Image 1 (cartoon, rainbow, N blue to C red):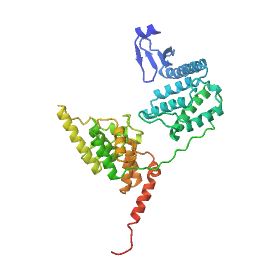
Image 2: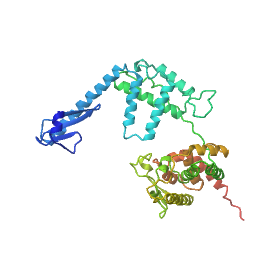
Image 3: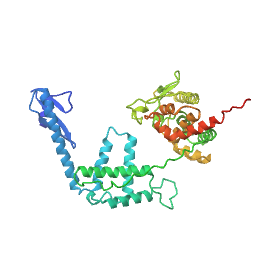
Length: 396
């Protein structure tokens, strides 16, 4: 068949994996399973019949491929590490899963290995509900014992956060789900483990004066990208954009005449969901800030002897976390992250009297404001009370 493919002319059709041999008019199936390409004559010159036979051929070949994969797992003795490798491979190749989600899944898989050291070499058929509960207790009380670079080692262990534990538990259950599908086990030994309830933290954000001091410290820290970091902090706080949305923003997506910013189109890979594609008003401070940034960008291009392009990115850097953390510490403010600047934007909007559904649309939420209400609802009440204090029935 390989020689025939080289010497005879093949014609593609509008049906995936269906080919026609030009010399004879006969239809052939070409299916790739487990990395191997398989060709088969469908023994017909009728297109409609060929489509039906192609479907049967694909179904049979993929079933054989799954049995081969099952056999490979059996050869490995049902080791959890092998099962996890299969799951990770599927996650990495998935076209429907966003890159941040893939990263979180990989991180959780590593956390599973750190909190359950012999998990990879353990036969999944030997894992009991008791062993799963022991792992859960260890993960919740001891954690991964990970210490960030340049940080002081903890004297007492810190358990995993609710979100980290729940993500790791999800990975563990994916392993058991695959084992059940392959017939290695009949039930999930972790089914009695309950997910941790995330603790709702109260947002502690800087006042306007504190924010200005933080930005000033960043801009005057004499680092190579100090000014760029300060510009990024202001852009995130003034617009409410997510980090990836801001770093992918180009000058061509800013309409200074209509006073709007067009957040990237769906399909660029920079959006969290399709609802994230939106327009953001050019608020006065945001417009002034971006106009200043554009003037600096044009001057820099002219200095380098290059022509300024609207396709160039607004931000020349990808993040500013270290600069932001250091500035908060020097200013005596609580540490902030890139995402906290998004919270700061929402807080300022609500405190300025903007209703929560509108703020939610500006931020690209897909739930009509439900998340924003849960996160910032208390601000509306505080604002309401502050405004109520101004209501009086006294004359003069």
